[in-house]
Length: 444
Image (cartoon, rainbow, N blue to C red; front, side):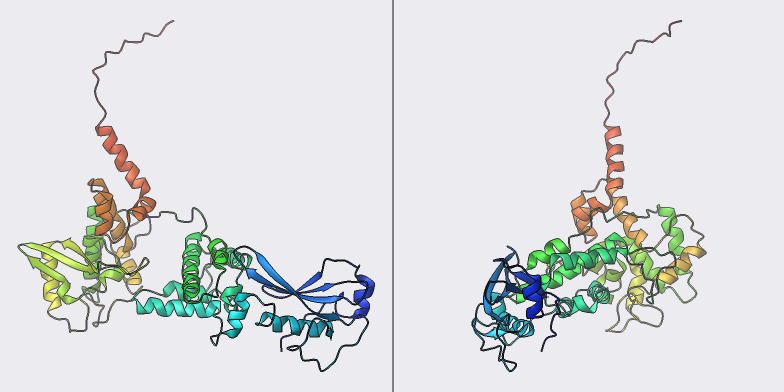
């Protein structure tokens, strides 16, 4: 049986008769999300009323009288709340039990509550919705890393709340609290500088959370409060700040040479050179197979699997990227040494590259090359490739297709470079009108 709510003014007949005025408007106490118990004070014995949410989108409720208060009569201590009527005398605690019984699908309950009670399936909780979404992502071959992070950042109370009972206020509080928490380093330790979670990280978490809740709503017609997370988990504005490191050709060559100098072997150099020549992500290059490198009519190509980002099923499975002939010849030789179940690009010992396995070795290579200034990561190769094609005046649509992204993302993250290129183009189009300007003589 559910725990009873304590209330100093409603708990006893003495308190109700002495502290509350006679009124047609009920005195309410909250029993849970979307459920309340009311007491209407009368000249005779008062009445108990239950109120439940009817349509979360419209903010409408249903109300129903469920019994008579024990203001002047005594309640049956062995009362069966399931069979009670509006004439049945009840104590405050018995009225709570009766209210919950009605909300679970008894007479007067809303269609949503009745459906929940009649269904054999237990309503899904927020935590279960995240688990179901993670399984769905796995089934479609997509990453579920952000889903795992969201669940880790949820308090047990929110995790165990039914999706149909989530409120905008509750979800917005979770989003805002997440933005105030200290950033965590690898291993779960707090950042020594006490830096808060980046706004862009919060937005990614909210996006994953909303996707999980939308999937739950799509699979269960009883869930009608989609506006709760549409507005409660709305993204933080101006959260994305471009911190792109753009490298010139000589700097990229210096970095690649340092990668090939890794004492463990050429594996880091091969991975880095593929990223530099194609402009693709490490996660894509790491999934290339031996047959993905081809040489035909003197032209070399690397067929790179598309990323697992974005929504829906991607109809294009690979991006065909031109690469230099010497690099293709070298990787053809590497492909002959791979086992059937091995990718083309492997770590030392033949293991596939994991998500962050390259980070520390690449950082060591940058140090060996004595490249100073802004922090250079392997992602700088992708940024440099996109910006290089922007300055070569290629259409953004083709640049987006070649880099497995969208025009909107390029415009959002490379707006400064696009504007610089536009200024350079505009300056070359300035006409010379052969104007004869009068010489201005300064007066005494």
